[in-house]
Image (cartoon, rainbow, N blue to C red):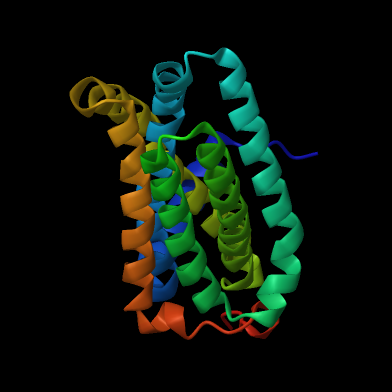
Length: 214
């Protein structure tokens, strides 16, 4: 079996980057995802601090992880049916908006039960739209380009993660863990609005009618 060389990786990255920045739809899809990934990493840093300050109980952190895990699993189970019933563009816009709103309500409620419930819903919505995004990156490029475009997109979006970890620590110190978590809600809502005013995104059809590049 032929080994995958480092030079091949960078060649794929270069090809994927050229395709990525010249393809308006993929570029417009990806810009908000970088920010969402950045603040998702911020959340990963801030959440344990928020739970400790809110409930003073490590058990609650475990229950919270269970609730969000089940939410994401339910979202993954629902995505196939929903993406065939509702146009992809509208699905992304609505679910991002709902994700941001659910997280916001949960955080400002100052109630343990509400936090679990609303973050469960938010994770379900996120599970759906994350799968839809992943599908789009598989369905839009030419068949021969999928691997190389995917390599660049994954690398491009992943850059935000270590930055988010550092930013999370700075934000917790500056504004506290709860306010730090609220940033993701704001970014999700703004991403939804961004897509809402982007005709290329709004007009994306149901998933089985998306046309691959020729």
